[in-house]
Image (cartoon, rainbow, N blue to C red; front, side, top):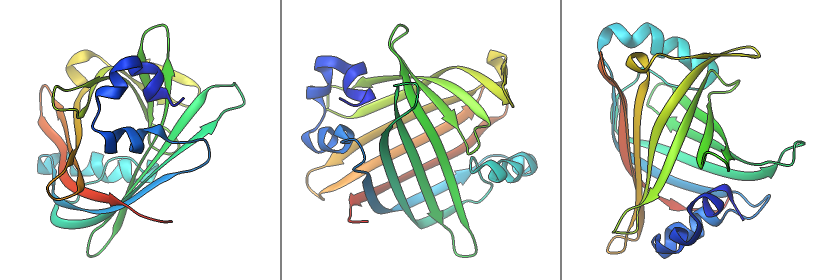
Length: 203
């Protein structure tokens, strides 16, 4: 049972069948997909130094573009603690540079949230809530966040947090997975957003 199946319980079966396959994630058998981001939008120009710095941790990045090829790989693995972790690897192939956006996800069964450690090595932490929409899509939204300084975790004031919304679905007509991600801040507005589609593939 993956962290998403455990967290959603019976609601997991309300996901589109293709999303159920995608998020079943047998241990050690990665889900790998290839697709295109129809558009990737970064934030205000003055955010570029922060976004560029974030690339050192394979986190956010400053580039924008249209029809950007990308790959996604999700691997379910067992940690020494006994926890189940999903390792997320997202790679965006811009014309002049390749960017990565990686994360490590486990769950907190008591609080019923995904624990999302962003970047590699992890730079930020965020609680994530997951739900299934009436249309059978997976919807993810962020909660409280922390900045990671070595072994220290410093709470981020709510006004400075990134407000993240993600919706993933499946288009039966075109037979593709769809993805929309929006990362905003209550003060500066958009930090990053992307929208695209993908299909599972062999590694």
